[in-house]
Length: 110
Length: 115
Image 1 (tube, chains in turn red, purple):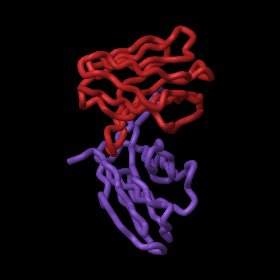
Image 2: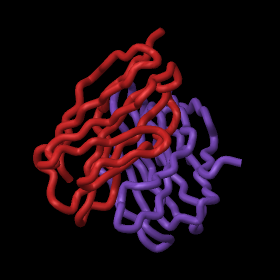
Image 3: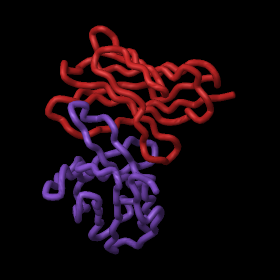
Image 4: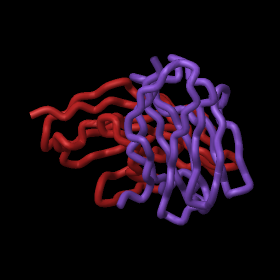
């Protein structure tokens, strides 16, 4: 699986957009980018995933660069409940299991 | 009821004791996983099972064993617990198609303390 690099922590004001970056420069053509988040000590929760096109759902948007070497998760209007650790994971091809790094700890403040 | 149920939620046990953590799911998924999480770290895979007859070691399987009793049940055992197995344990299920990382469902976790 391709390795990902994320900043260890970020802050965001409530109501503003939270933009969480992820580098995955060794991603291969058949690998997807997944985002999960973990609120406090709960089980991780799926947010969104994509292959090469930008994706949007009710939770977030995912922007993948044209060369696919990096991506950004966007929470358009962050709330205090979005405070969590966000994991960017690359998976595909013959690999078949999610592997978690240390993620980005997002703190949303008033 | 939760889709993935872990029992117990919290457990304190003594060094050397055998302990079993249980996981059951109502998702109907074939794939099940056990992860552990240490403070400040991401989740690490202990064991995984792609169907009832398929059990595989993850990256940190030493000191652990598993049993897949049915499609819906996947148990994790610590044969002789030691303090560095103190951690938060998560069970998960998935039913992937081409998008292999999509739709993992995690339980609420079991907080295990070995004293």
